[in-house]
Length: 312
Image (cartoon, rainbow, N blue to C red; front, side, top):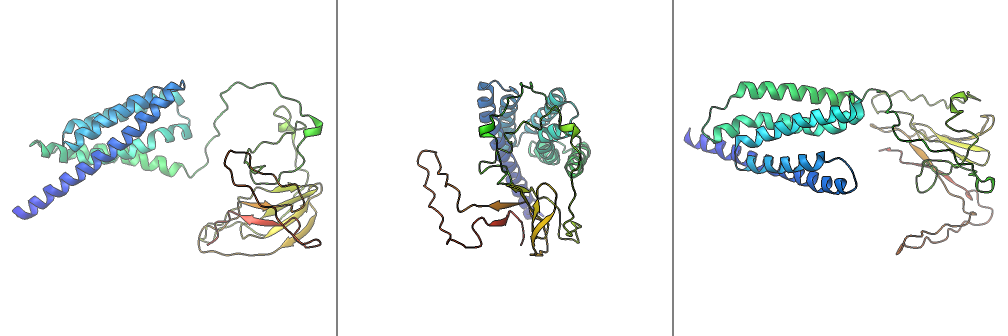
């Protein structure tokens, strides 16, 4: 019995040291990042919380119950700060509270070990109640991340619309993020925030690939490409289709019908025009991109490929 008790004591001591170190490192990241954020004019919360977590981690390593109480107080203040800053908007709130909620659950379960290390009564019941409440709330928040929520309203200041120079108007959408840089915005002004609500469906095309999961997570997540008068799309099972951008008429279809046991989807396509001028990187020290060579008359002068398919 004595040996068993000694082994438990060693395990408990090792657990508290590990827990304290993790909280200390997290607090250090909060403090360093918070200090940089504060210098940029951001919130002071992260710096204050970081210092508090560092102190809590040190106390837990020393097996002092005050470390758990300090973590709990920081968590309560985090809840108050989050509600004050973002209200009940789900995504901003969950991003501020979920990690701290998980940490608070673990710390609450460890609180009796800290008390026992100081020769005090462990008080398991209130610790378990607190851990259950915070843990269930955190689990509920995590589960809620997988259901739709209202979008976060834009809170900035809208600037005036800038007219587009016709000579520089964008013609194509050649990458899933618009450009190779992934800027996701197109330099066109025929459709703007003032008239986008008036858009209506011009045509509909059915791919024939129904994104119904049979246990493999099939979903339709494609961002189409538009090059000239052609719209390129891919389906969850990696079929590639070219459509007339004006009418929706099918130009051609390549059937891949890829299958995987999990996570079956195509998130976008890659397009490359071998005849287009090659753009070299401009960053200092960047490696030049070698010119592509495609034989004249080859069928793949401007190939289209599935990208980021997550197929296994």
